[in-house]
Amino acid sequence: MPVQSVVWVANRNNPLTSSGLLTFDEDVELVLLNQTGSIIWSSNSSHVARWSVAQLLGTGNFVLKDAENDNTENCLWQSFDYPSDTLLPGMKLGWNRKTGLNRHLTSWKSSSDPSSGNYTNNLDPHGLPQIVLHKGTTKEFRTGPWYGTQFSALSALMANPVFQTKFVSNYDEVYYSFIIEITLLQGLF
Image (tube, rainbow, N blue to C red; front, side, top):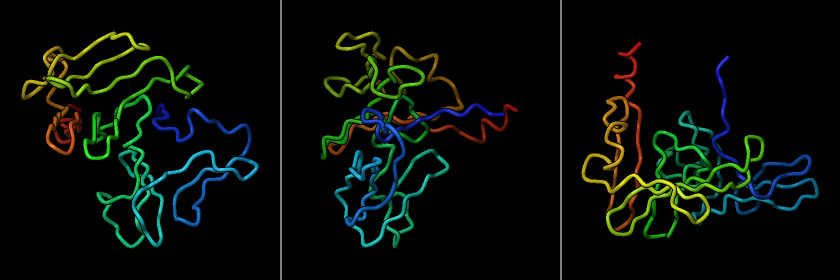
């Protein structure tokens, strides 16, 4: 039986104490209600749609999209913008400079408690961008700056031909991402 991991929790710092309901509100936002009907989490999208649909994609991205537009690239909201403690292929680690959205990883408090733990992993966009692991406010590790094809301190890891890395730094955003090259992976087995 394959091992399954939880890679995203909507209400990680505001848990349900008993049953809840995931539904759409009158603004076609995805909302999580507690047992008394109070909203404890919302997708809070800035985009407007007449009808919306929630869908879990094969990538692990939970998206809210306009029911009249099947293009998942133009989703109204996506879990990949609010990662938990796992960086999945196709997920961005970094900043949207237009909106100020900081996509970063935060550890779980424990293996059974998904609330925010002590560790964060984020892309520091100042100077030469690099990924930094913090425990509280203390820097525990940094990748060194990106220098065209990889982060300087991760050369052995990033030389793996199965992972195709991507680093973007422009006016709109700065982020690191990766995909797994399936054709190369299939050739290994």
